[in-house]
Image (cartoon, rainbow, N blue to C red):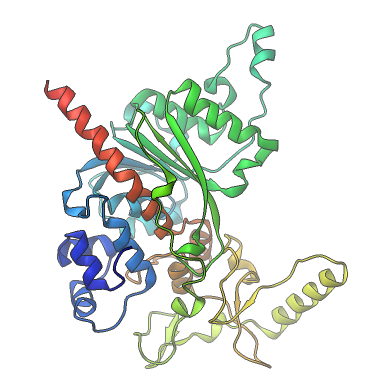
Length: 408
């Protein structure tokens, strides 16, 4: 087991406060306070530190490797691979608002590219690891046997053409990175009656020759939110990777109180999210009488019909439902109770960031509507810090082996 205090975890990583400041997004001054027991960091910070502790016991001994970040969103997957010594050499994200948030939080020596479907493979730099949170689409072309009978070609170039997975596959085929990590919603397993995951796994294993493992992980191990995602990991050679190495804290050890604004002056007011000396939540996040009445009526109607549809009213002691990209519409899946005879409120964008495991120094340069969409579409960062951690020794071994072969 890892120690629980900030100072003990930081010592075990072997990383200086200055380097840690860059990785976590907090000032050195704030880290120094935590180091000396002045206050307690959020669980997401401690989870990130745990993810930085390599299997040899020191993150300082980790090798450097290059990776690319596809369908990057606001950089949630990237944070995990930055934390294990990775250097991002290429980023692709088509949404202009997500690009704004990504650019505000990552300083890169490469431009932020747009639609990956419009970028030739030759223009993508060589890399050791491919990271992608690609959207899933159905694969509707007929199967291999039918194509053979018609004398048509088959394989991913035919089956996946027109889907976004095709772009992942074409890059893997041409660039042959040593490893990859793909993320998607849990329903990828049943999407298009199971055909989508079937084509993906056959492509990765049989056609591209990678050794692949997949697992569904619930972010509730790290954050107070039920959020299941499928993670697909692959290596160019057989390595002793195992999901048994995951260190998942018990579900429920964090509650919404860990991410909600305390409203007692213990945090500094931030922009329009919180106001005044006590940093109370801006009243604009409280539901109007009209919207609150509508949501209650909608829930009553579905309850009477025997359906489970309705709003999710939560208290600081609860764990939330999955935050979705539609949260900006009415906030119905996670409404924070303000007590009896008071209308509940939405989470603020900063609370959404915390719910996804982003540190408080993560910049939110876009409107509330865009921020809600971005965090609803994001991954839970600590989950992928942990996945990256258990991938790290195997990535390092493959990189070192390639370096030795090149030097020979």
